[in-house]
Length: 306
Ligand code: PGA
Image 1 (cartoon, rainbow, N blue to C red):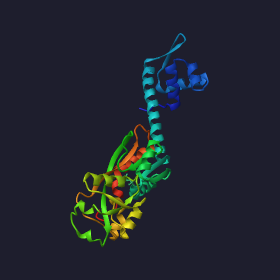
Image 2 (cartoon, rainbow, N blue to C red):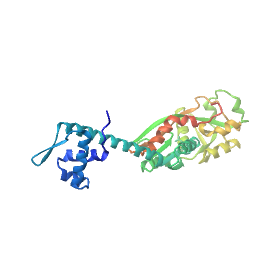
Image 3 (tube, helix red, strand yellow):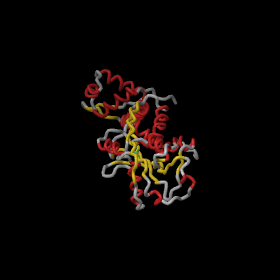
Image 4 (cartoon, rainbow, N blue to C red):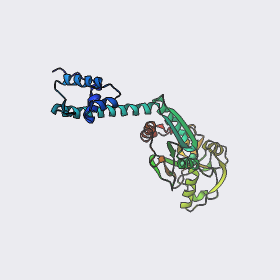
């Protein structure tokens, strides 16, 4: 059996005539002349080998075959529309713009994650903002970014947050610190310590404060710094002990410049979340990035024992 030779144009014209039951109105809708509409229908009827319309008075009714054709015709139009949506979505993923904000502490792995994501999609443009928890909270409030990567999602705000990876906070000391060789050091031993800490507004800092409060041990802050890099350097230089996310320590642990102290109830176990305002309509590229984070983030952590 040889397949029917019909064109998508014929189907489009046929669908319009069948719906409107009128050649003139179909011609207007399609911006065609009426003879051109009649010709398309005639050619379609020739391909099918059956009449598709019958004229009763001034009205064009579908024949039995015409009703079948109309059902197929609508299915074909739906399929074409569906295909179009799929291709538009693919174009969006490959060409869209993505605006992401990440917590200072997450920047260590997030930049690698973004680099890999954009390598696979050379047409996209990315804007990455690295800032502390308090600033992230404000950005979410103003709905300024597509997605935010942070520790604790903000309370008292309608957000959708999905955890994707553990975020252990550990206590760090210079390699030659006397406590470096001790095991299971009681937390109370640090009640007089003045820690090198992040600025107020940092998620790490508030998590540490909560942890000490929970254990009933006073937490004293010494020098305050707005970057994890600065904290590590200060600790290495002997300015005090620090508590940071293990994800900021890759290089220092590898080279042995800093050590993690074995403290009772440590690490302070937290999780990274990918967060958006509830109800926000994400672009195709943002949806793809979120999926990428949820599935692949763990691979971008490089700790010496991994
Ligand atoms: P921070 O964020 O860099 O503000 O400490 C980490 C977090 O949100 O836990």
